[in-house]
Amino acid sequence: MTHHRRRASLSYRHRCRGTAYVLAVGLSLLLAAVATGSLLASQALMHAGRDQEDVAKARVLARSGLAWGLAALNRHVAYAGGTVPSTATLSSASGRESLTATIANSAPAVGVNEFQPAVIDSTATVGLAQRRIVGQAIAVTRPYSAFQKALAVGKVLTVTSSGTVSIPSGEGIAAQLDVAGGGTVAGDVEQSNAVGNTVKSAADHAAKLVAFPEASAIDTLIASGTTYIIPTGTSAFALSRLLASPRSNPTGTLNTSGIYVVNCAGRRVSIANCRVAGTLILLDPGAGSFIGSGIVFEPAVHGYPTLIVRGNMTFSTTSTVLSESSGTNVNFAPQGTPYPFVGGGWDTDTSDTYTPGIDGMVFVTGDAVVSGRLRTATFVVCGNLTVSGTLITEPDPWCFVAPAPGFTSTTWQLKSGSVSQPLPAP
Amino acid sequence: MINVGTRSTRFAGPRPARGMSLVEVSIALLVTAVATAACMQAATAAAKTAQTAENVRQATALTDTMMNYLVMLPFADPTTPSAALGADSGESATSPLAWDDVDDAHGWSGLPIEQSAASGWSMQVTVGFVTMGDPLVGSGTDQGLKRITITTLRFGRPLLTRTMLVTRE
Image 1 (cartoon, rainbow over the protein chains, first blue to last red):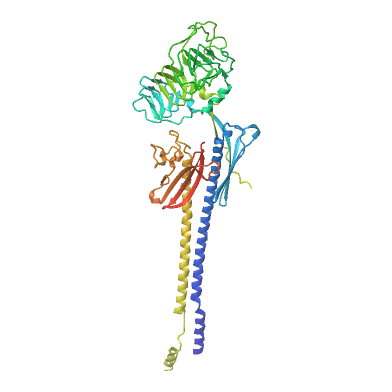
Image 2 (image 1 turned 90 degrees about the horizontal axis):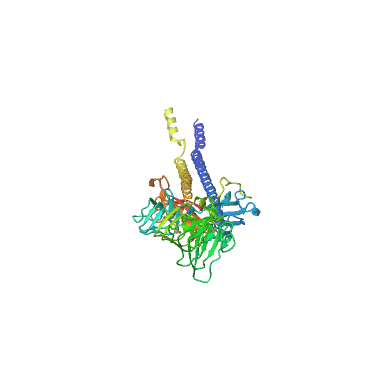
């Protein structure tokens, strides 16, 4: 009996030996499994997050390729005209990121327009993530915003104490720098510095950036103009009692758009008692040049400037009328050049008088001075303008609606709805 | 008497070992403790990783919000065009809502939109010119392309950087 119990006890002890180890190892394995599982799950989450971030980065980078393409189109001289671009390719890499973009004309033979846009194809890679974005760019041509103003001055508008600038209610004056001088400005003035008390303006606020034409903007009109023959030999010459229009050029051949180019070549020019039904372009007038009284200007083509000055000019105009019978008799409204030029009448006599004024855009690439009384429309001065007389101006809407050739800027922009995200090319 | 003797004989012999020995339990406890410690470490690492993943997700959202705001700003200052980067004279460099062009954000650092200082989030923005030939490389001059770089930080540590090019549109 005793032996039997001992054997049973020994057997029981043998059976229990190792149970603690088994329990401990089992528990450890369970813990390890749970911990490993959660670790793996969190790492998978982390990797998924990183991959997602790489995808987001690749998408943004691919979008950047479109920005590069637009910048290239807007910067490249050959593209700026909105004509036929060649293919441009970008390949850039930094660290884990790489960007490849190409610009191609969808139909090189016919040029670029709304129906044949340039195609920007951008592919970005970040790590293993890759994204491709394709967009179409079109060249949008629009007139310079300076033409929307009654008066646009590229630098400082100085209105002296004796000066007055008037524009119609609701129209705007834009001076890219200051308006100063102590005179009177009646109009909505946009300028970069405070008007203060020197100018009594109807309103003033911070100037908005106004786009002025480039110096080359007038080249197209010059190229399509007819040279106006001027006296030679002296340092100064005068244009007086002349009629210039598509049907009248006393000095030479006619220009169908009435564009006449006077190459002053640094010589002083004075213009008075003239009628221009067209576009008069004065190139490089010398110091002391001025436009005097008896001036009746209007464009022959809606939207074209009627006076362009490449250089500086003084306007000492007055309210004196233009008379056909003053001095040499001249019929300023003969057949073919009615007054007004569009929808007006003509006659054969030389007894008429005309109210002075410029009924069209005046564009001066340099500085201008208004010392007399000047009535005009859309006065654009790229340099400084000093007004010591009276300037009455209003915008000519045609200049903005139908600007002259060269008086527009071209901007490439993405065609609405054209951006897509196709699969990356294999 | 016989019963006593029998009892005496029974208690005089070796004691039966029921259950586990002290050594056995000690070793088992040690193994369990080591395993538990290791598992705790792993669990902590897992929690940290999960938190980091969540932070990256949040950082992505905050960065995208700021990037979307910046790309909507004009490429150049509409009132006082300047080649210099950063807020122009008279403009606030600290308030994103006061920026009127994209490079006003250059050098800005502050709280992401709709975040308090207590959240631990902060943000740094740089804007620079890049070359047309390689827009991933900086340039000193304006070639019509600007690069926005946003770095989002969590308790002062950079967590995410996002770069985007913008141009005039």
